[in-house]
Length: 321
Length: 268
Image (cartoon, rainbow over all chains, first blue to last red; front, top):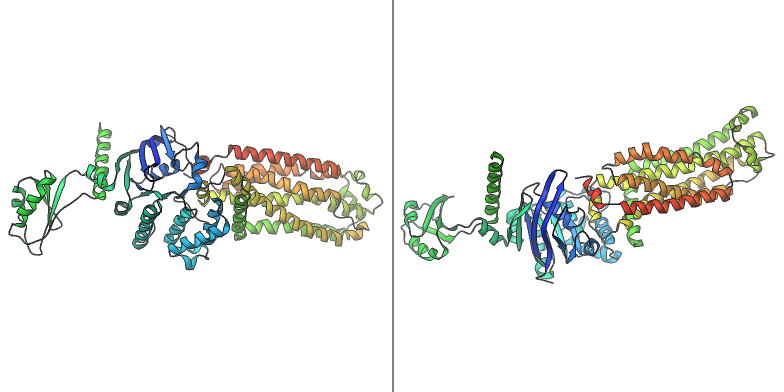
């Protein structure tokens, strides 16, 4: 199934009363991929998840297809193959095991299968020794793990995770993201994740989309999106401790557009990538001792922040006009 | 419609309600007052009341319609009429009250606690969800009404038989009441509360609307149950069957108008 679109959306719009949440969302996610939907609070990420999972109807859309079926028309064909974790709650008076097996039953799993699978997931998330305790006694992070396990109980082909690492400590967040990547690579599962944690998204997502003003304003692999939004070609020159870089001399080299300092290093912006090898030779020949000279690719976080700042400026200009 | 999914929903709700004293306390204490204190109070009191007072007690009741009590003493007539007719309304109030509380807790309560949304993403159908929720309130309501009925039957047989002079309870009317009317009334009330619960955001709102709008209407109808029982078990059974048919129509309508978006939107 890899290569086919697991999710295909064209022109999706949805408002709440007079307030538009999504104005025209277009996105495509290939099967087996991990898609990260990024955006500030209130950008419409959860609304997108709710529309794709058929609990909210779109106001209008040319196409909303999930796993090859139309949403919301064919939603009953989609639901058995989809797991969803959103900001919902667990049954506090039931144990973690009961919470999971109940959802297994809702997916039509035989009790023995649901029990086995719930046990596997709770072990995977480090909760096996507290499986028989009521969820009401759990910490926020533990509840979050049970919510994610609940989304995975029926071994779904497509999993929606809405801010899955919220409330998790960095180690648990890293483990979860590694698990997501393994499930995607080894089992061909497709993930649709919304998050603010851009570093995590960059490491795990095969594709990201940035939601702003009700539209997906950029989408592609994290590298593509970052490069598209931050097109400058840059080289970082890190001096050895005690060494002084001659910024003026660096700025005078052929192909250099500008030079700035960043955390003790120099960041050199160059006209084109093919100017870099000559530049590296010239920098190495300079008197200052160096630790490293390397191309500095843009990060997703940098791209995201730049995009948001551009959007804000644009909105202010529109307001002023 | 999958029976095991419906059973899972109902069983989960029952386990949750069983763990909540806030839900369970009123549904257990109040009925016990109805079925123990009132009948015991009246039947013990009869021993100390004068015949004139006792006659005043049932002068408005058309006792001629009850041939079983002709020839009984005044006290015997009062004991029979009270236990076989008057207290019957309690046995509709018990499941009505219990079903209202349980249904509001299981549906509006789940919305309020943000647990319902999770179920809406699963393959559970609207019919399975609505029927499961209705059963989770109806089954304990009917079962508890039957437990109360057993207790009441023992009390009546111990305290009323000496006045009447023979074993007379349960009368055929009571079998119709317990086996047909109590379940159908429970379904009716629960369905009404589920309908309300799907449209409000909190357990409190569901309980208030159910308490101030649904319950008075239901109780107004229940008030007529004594009169209906006087018509005899066959006609009383017809009332139960009609109510059962109404239940089916009501449940179909609730499933048809059930809208996941409205449930989700109510807490956005």
